[in-house]
Length: 300
Image 1 (cartoon, helix red, strand yellow):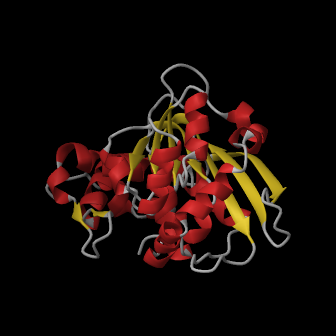
Image 2 (cartoon, helix red, strand yellow):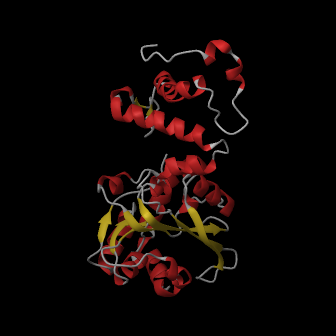
Image 3 (spheres, rainbow, N blue to C red):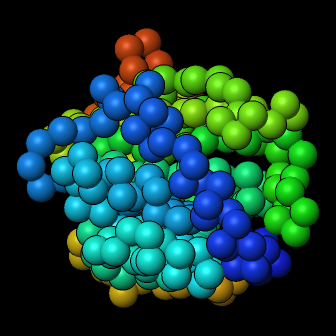
């Protein structure tokens, strides 16, 4: 499932009126509270997902960014091209943003304005992961969360800051700022939360997902690093063992036996030597003389 087709059809059908509504708001004023947190410097790239009329994408371009504007509704894209010629438009949608990924670019700034509420909750973890992998180290992701009733013909689902904070922890992003704001169009039953997140720059260019595992698993670090080292070893020496998941998602499956074998290859010599994982915790396995005297056999 993606952003529902009927939702995109609603934006397509009402594109002229919606574009006029969006363009009535100043992007510069709208994003002024987060401007200081946006990356600066030459050669910066920005991605606007669900770009609508192109209002925000055009403003980002005026700030010196090279901008990719992703919008799935044909009518909205046409309005965007007419109003803001010169932007790079892509026909794409969450959660996969497949066309954006095919561009092979990484971004200093990624924006989702009035988009997240259109995703069913089951699609949001995948969407967040896809967005996180598009960020450069130190890249910034900004999402706006809508609170209030749905618009006719455009399905919307509840959003919470807690959901975003959980996803951010899982993918190693830091929450920089949370702003609760009234609706810019003056609707009394609609309010917004703007969330600013940053992917830390640790100099390693590591995957956000790997960083998220290391940050959030409460087991000791050697356990986590051992697992990651085992998976990395498979990728380096036996990549043919990995294969696509049978459910058609973008997950990759790796045989548990291969992970276990590489994990044992790294850790059994340490266990046999009586080296504890953490001080005063050698684990119950060391009570076994047979294991303590074992020798690792690569062919086993």
